[in-house]
View 1 (spheres, each protein chain N blue to C red):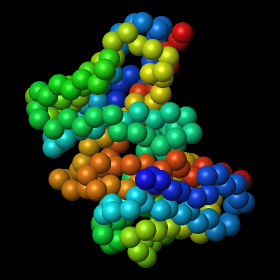
View 2: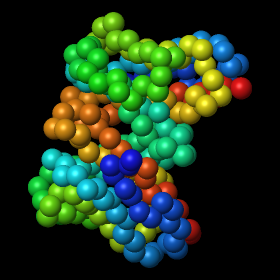
View 3: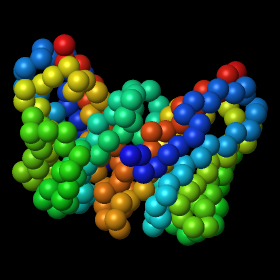
Length: 110
Length: 111
């Protein structure tokens, strides 16, 4: 199995630009999670889906963040407009019973 | 408020020494998980503990779940440089799939 696949691995963008992060979960997994990791705050859960339905988005920082899961094999996390404080590593993870993480998308907003 | 508090935040020890890191909460968890994360990668699950008082061993790593299911510890015997990494504990909130993480213990084993 290819594991959880995230893209892009690295992105540097200017403040105000739209950022779209993509995730392909492991086939057969029914839950998908988006986390953000920073040194200061650690690994924070932003939103998670179960069977493609958003269950809890209370961790989404503000309206600039949105996430979608149009089908069982694809999810996006969008930031519009991006700000320097959004710089972090964004992880997508999927699970059936055990959570498996992707390698992360390293976002830098300048 | 951090629901899972990990200590110490940083630990640097010599190869061959033993160490213990902790994960504490004021809340009861149905299970706790330990992950290791290496630079540039996502966290990888090491173990899940479910029963209060449970002890699980993974080679030189020993994981224990507290009797009240509010805390857990990870003990490493004869640490090796390959043990270097960020150790995270995690658990489900409110009996659902929402998994929250502690901030982790950053472990560095000096050769």
